[in-house]
Length: 428
Image 1 (cartoon, one colour):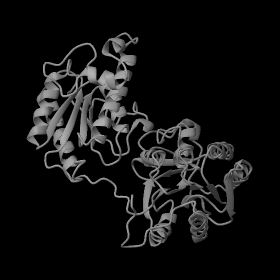
Image 2 (tube, one colour; image 1 turned 90 degrees about the vertical axis):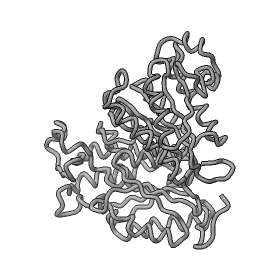
Image 3 (cartoon, helix red, strand yellow; image 1 turned 45 degrees about the vertical axis):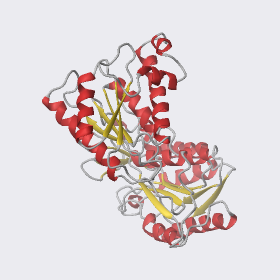
Image 4 (cartoon, helix red, strand yellow; image 1 turned 135 degrees about the vertical axis):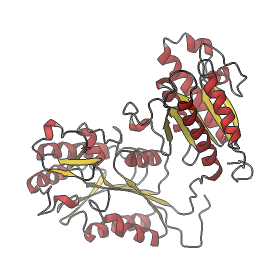
């Protein structure tokens, strides 16, 4: 975005990040493709030992200075890991400053594991809506933990990109350059015309409360953003909450937390259910789907769950249930996380069930295990959290009514800002 005019540039300025001493040919090819797509490439060099054969707009000394150090100190820091970690700090700081000053409209970075590690930090330094594109030999790999992935990060596998240019990697690099320029031209940044309420959920076949909650909250003058809690959805919710991007959070689907505790790859990271409370964002919490553990359908059922009730949602995602003892552990973990909340927090405990398939006649119906969770949860809701137990199921309208009653009381008390009526805008 043009900082002065607030309009999208027809020739957006794209920061091109990479180690010019080892990948000069690839980066020069990207520079040409950004120009061909109508962008203005600005080269940022994150080399440590050598120098690129071109003059970058921002050299390695500028990157080191942004990390409050020098290239010599970075070289002497220990090894390649410590050196690139320091360069990552400098690149992230410099990129954020350039964005804040209106000098760039997005970035594209190139790398293997080293370059990707650095690029992930750069992406996290920029707000939602700024194009972030990483060309990586480990794109979409489980080597990348969820908490390192920016909310709107774009990645593409750098196929054939280990050493030197070839027709395969040119096909990839050209697509990436066109994509980041196009995103900078047409992408929209969030417009905070109404206070935003973040809601976590799964699909309607499992959890349905959002169907009724969304129109009710919109009628009250709020924008509603719903996150699909299959790993990265919860990560996005946590990231935006950490930046205080919500007026309130309704975190009603905690399956990712249960997954993480059970060792599943379908995780949002260890800090799930922590960032809203840490940032002072009011939150209403419920234990939607904590009884299920997800894993890829295309892999064998983990041996420890071989005898547990099983549900294949599709060819990608399957679930088993945790037993009563595991659910008690999940209840204790929820309580411990909520105890650290620094804003008003309420917990709704729907004793009648917590996801569609745990009801009588459904494949994951286990009343004794549910009762164990409810009992343990009652014991572990901390003193700073208001407990609201209801006998109904989480998919009942009684649950929606309880959530809205808590929310409305918070609005009346000034805990949550009032919604904005149609036709009016906030001053933010």
